[in-house]
Image (cartoon, rainbow over all chains, first blue to last red; front, side):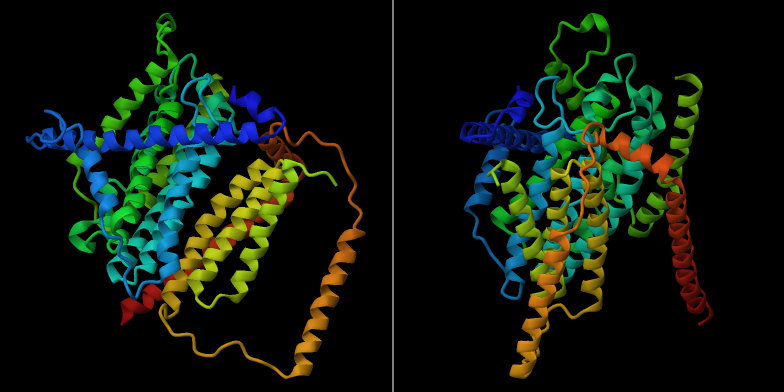
Length: 334
Length: 175
């Protein structure tokens, strides 16, 4: 339907329609963020032999995050006196906007996609790379040494890990012969790419955890060394925007892994086709999301110098070898 | 000229690109300039999309987002961030300003004439469909030798960077 809308002649009706659709997606994503934070706290709680939030909103703490967000909205908005005011205000916007932009190209089911881009995968990687400006800018504008260190670390980490991230999906691109996410899903009709690309999947999973700066790689905001990293000076709603960007990326990255390696909305076997694609997508999505939460609560943080060595000396050669291997396999068997 | 969506998009992107460029020249702090640069580059990527070169647009954003953050880091490391602006813009004599203005107008006129009379042959092409595929075909068949030269150049610069970094390391060890 969106395809028809995109090709029809422009007008106010289309504008309003797209605006409402975007707004709905934003609300859905906000709902996801709220409950993924709760899920994260519950999973971490049970892994650490405690209950997690269980006071607000029934036995499972269903309203805990809602209350937290409400608290953030009511908080006093502080801009430090010596901070660079315009940049301090601009930084959360630059950090958040790309995280929502990348969702446009993700096909949730065969019908539900906002923009069927020919270079969808590349678009995702390119636009998500823009967030690092916001982080570095926020770290610099705060005029605080911990913030600046956190921002610099985030930059080094994100730029280094972007390379193995892209290299590891090259195998998928080789096998499917397209950068379009829809074509990649359709290419997995006879077998998920995790079966054909196990090495690529592992490299991608590790590099994506680093891109999301989640726990084994959460050096930009490691609280034992840097207070809170790049968002030390941020309060209230501006801080919430940084957090929101982080969790929207979690949403987007999980969706991307589902599409690239687990066949997106397609059923694993032909005879299970009667279950709608959205159900399959959300099932796979939840499993991968749980994997990320699991990582977060079980791995210790890496040291800063090891982190860089790991990206350049281990992940990158492995990803390159995977490309070679995939090329050989493709030319021999496909 | 008809007012189409493309026209509006082009105007908005061009305005953002030019304003970014002007701000880049006029701002005082390095980090502010780099932010202006970001807007220019992203707007130019948007113009590529209008021209159906979606692959080039994505690569532009991908490459420059890394490059600009590095520039920003160097800017932060090599300058004093919170210096009060010392000297304001230097004011020359009246004659100098007038000559400068005439020079700018002359240059603008020359560029306008040059671009307006530039012969662009409208070659029908099918680049808008399967853009990435077409770029790849052209790059690996027609332009293979320049492509290989560029990769040799990149390799040479890579080795140069390694040698520069290594030398410093050795001196540090001997001390």
